[in-house]
Image (cartoon, rainbow, N blue to C red; front, side, top):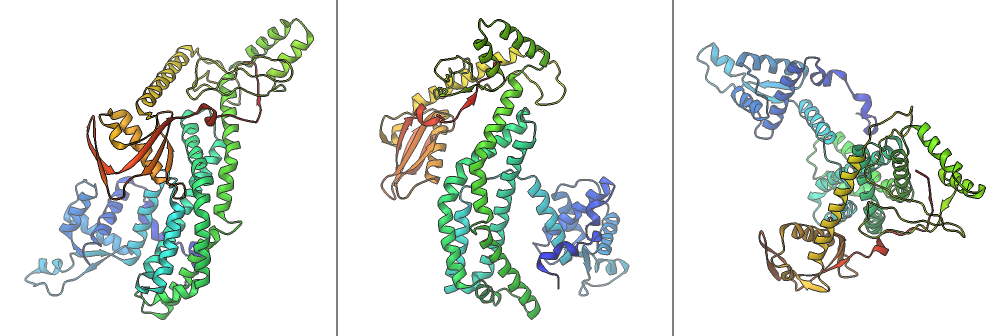
Length: 516
C-alpha cells in the first residue's frame, strides 16, 4: 500500500499524458471530453454518445466532432485508462448497428475521476482570487467542536467531520502561502511597479489588520478545543468514525484510520507553541518593518533624479552656496541620511498632497520637506541611470485627483456624522454613495462584534469616519427609506464620528531627511 507521505513516489507520467499533448487542438479536445465525462458521472452511472456530445458543447467546446471522431477519442481515453465502455446486453440486437449500440455507453474510471478532479482543482486554485478570511480560525474551532460533539452523540457524521479537517488544513496552507508570497515580493520585487507594489501592499496591510487581532483572539479558543480533542484521542476518534465510512476491506479501513489520525496530528501541529500559526502572527507583526522599508525604497527611487550627475551637481551647488562650514555639513548630512529628523510632525487625517510636513532635530530647527506622494518622477531603483521625460503634468493631475478624493471623503463624512447614537431610521433619504459606504462599514462592524464590549467598531472605507454599532431590540426589524429604495434589517443603534487625526498616525521613531 502507498505510504501516506510518499505519494510523490507513485506519480506515473503516463497518467498525465492527456494533459501534456503537444498539439493545442488535440489536447483541448481530450480535456473537454474528460470535463464532460466528469460532470456526467454525477448524473448517472454511464452516458451515451449523444449525451456526451451534448455535454461537450455544454462545457464550452464548440468545435465540430462527428460520431466516429467522438468514438475514436473515447477509445483512445480507454487505452490511457481514463474511460471505459459499458455494454447493455438487454438491448435488442436486430442488425450490426444493434451490436454497436450495445457499446455506446461510457463512463470515467476511478483513476480518470481522480485525475480529472485533481487537475480541475489545481487549475481553479491557481486562478482564484487571493483571500485572507478573517474567521478562518473560528471555522477550525467549529470543526473541532463538531467532531467532539458527534463523537459523544452521532458517530455517523464523524467521517464527514474528519474530511472537513483536510479542508481546514488546505485553507490554512493557502492563507499562509498567499501572505508569505506577498511579503516576499515586497522584499524582492521592484516596488516602483505600481501593480506589484499596490497588490502586495494591500495584502500585507490586510494581514496586519487581521492576524495580530482577529487571529490572536480566536487562537486561545482553538488551542482549548485542540486540548479537548487530544484528551479524547485522535485514534479513538478515527476508529469510531471508520465504522460509518462505508469501507468493507479491513486493509482499507486501517489505511483510512491512519490517514485521519495523521490529519488530526497535522492540524494540531499548526497550533503548537512554535507552529505555523504562531510564526504567521509573528511574521504579520514583523511585516510592519518590511512595509516601511518597501515604502522607503519606493519613495527614494521616485524622489531622486534619474540622472545621478544632475543630482550631484545640484548638491555641489547647494554646498557651495552655504555661508559657513557648519551649514555645509548640515546639508551634506541631510543629503546622505546622516541627519535624523527627530519629532516629525504628523499630518492631519486628510493629507495635503501639495505640501510636506515640517521636521526638526536637535537644538536648532531645520526645515525639510518630508512628502510621500503617490506619483513622482520615475526612476529605476538600481542599474544604469537613464533620463526620463518631464512628468510635471502627470504629477499635477495626480495632485488634483488626490485633492478631489479628499473633498469627496470630507463630503461623505459630513453626510454620515450623527453627533451621537441614533437608530437606522436616522439615515432616511440618504444618497446611494454615502449609504453604500455606511452599510458596508456596518457589516464590517457586525463581523467584528465584541461580545464583551457589546458593540462592533469599524472604519468606513471611503470616508474618514468611525462606525460603532450596538444591537437594539432582539427580533425587531427596521425599514429605512433610502434614495434608491427601501432597506429592511435588524434593529441597530449606530454612532458615526469623525476619525481623530491623533489616533490615525503618530510615530515615536525617526525618519531621515534628504535633500531632493
